[in-house]
Length: 487
Ligand code: PNW
Image (cartoon, rainbow, N blue to C red; front, side, top):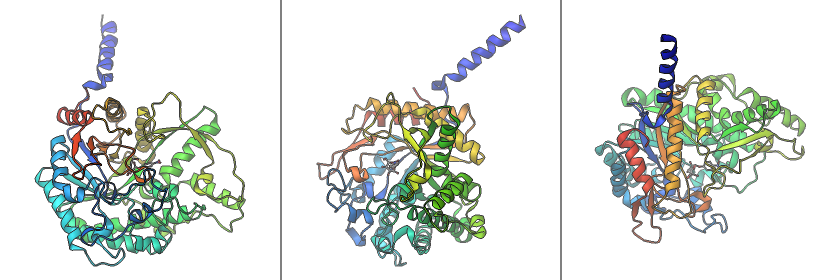
């Protein structure tokens, strides 16, 4: 008898466990939504704020598809009280927003604090806390001071001092109340896929040198910020400092060992190049070897990868209290062909080709196809590669072009990506501690302006009042937060 019932019992248990709809998010799991300063604030020239690279580049004809700017955006500079009200209505634990550097330090690299800018964030932070919403603050979400861009941006070693001067100011002004800090949003977009002088703008052609100077200076600025927190603030403020890396999952396009290796190489170039120095030690070996080999082929006197000294490696290692992860999509990756040696770029160094499956659902951001299992795989890869660090999903979201309130595809997206998160937690034991949806509301989607909409709230950009209306996906997210389960 027993030999029959036991397996049946086991089977029942398995069936029960695999019904993830019944699973709840762990008690300490946090839900939130995310935004960034340039994408929502507006008030571009108000109260002493000076120009960032985005205030300037949006003036370049043709740069933004609909010719728009972030001058007003969602007008959150004036409507922060309403933002807090709709956050409260959603019931979120966390609100992730970023601080505009040029609102706080008008000079960019000088230390003179702009009190009006500080007052804006004080109001926002105090209102969040009064409503039991914890602020999660990104220091740098792409809006580099124009003054610093003029000096070469991330390619100038002075960047490290400029940034840490700004970061210290933020700890001083807000660290008594802000306990979760993110130094940088998506360094690989900053350094490798956009122009590193300007911050995130494809004006100058990537030349295979500037990408790695940016990586090097950004990592040093991140680590130095972490050490400043340790030395001057941690004891008093008791907060956490991390970084947000974006990670599109790379799946091998075949079982051919070359494609399998190419997919892993791509992960290391995209994610490992930042995560390995911070969590393990130094750049990943495959990145070091490949850039060195390619540089030799191109007749460079040494590797274009700007290497750390031993002291630098030691000082960067361990500079995180959590890892922020932005995740949207997945690619099928295979071995690429060697480009002509007269060409040099980060992308050429990766030596991969990639494509997406036609059967995957497309979104308004055409590359962001819906592939929920990619999130679970990415989380598992991070767990294995870096010893299961605490992960906060700091962005994940779905875009359409209409902003319709009846957004069932977005509901489906969240259902599936949240389910993948639950699987990673309950089946795989990954330490995922939070999920923040991108975004609280429709906003300025960089060079796609207002044509691509990610919000849980619709914003009427024709109306000077910029009214916000909750979408059905917002109602759905609200229910998930309230019940801590997926229906
Ligand atoms: C993220 N890519 O950006 C940003 O952090 C947000 O500011 C942005 O609004 C959001 O995703 C939606 O796009 C990305 O091309 C932009 O791989 C581009 C890519 C990835 C992330």
